[in-house]
Length: 218
Image (cartoon, rainbow, N blue to C red):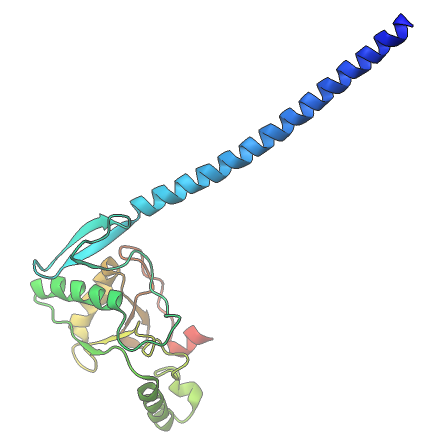
């Protein structure tokens, strides 16, 4: 009888040990998972705090550096990322695109370079008119799209495309092609020296040029 009680006691002790080990493993897994989530949250927070943000002081005609969390105060932000098409219909040039250009224009002016937006935001109707004119000129929609995209493909109606110094003065516009990355503006087409878009965050490297607008769409 005592032997039976002893064996039962041993089995019960082994069971308790196994349960303790299992609970320990569960606790370690949960703790590791929570730690990972906490670490990810901290990294995201640090990233948000440290993400560089350029601000344009229009009165002093100068740029100064901040971070996203602190913002630009009374001055205008260039934005900290590339600028994509808005969800809703645009009615004017995107404010960040405008600020980027003004900052670039200010810097260029100090060096004797003249930069002017000759076409920025366009209504869908205006873009359609220009597209149809291009179809007449080039003979087909495909050829026309290498130079002027239809409204649903162009970024002008989205308020995030700029034509600079067109149709004259490509020399000064070359300065923007070389230096535009500092402000988050890039020339995008080989066949259009005047066309710029905010496809990067200020300070990033501009992507290689594509042949024309149709190439980008395809």
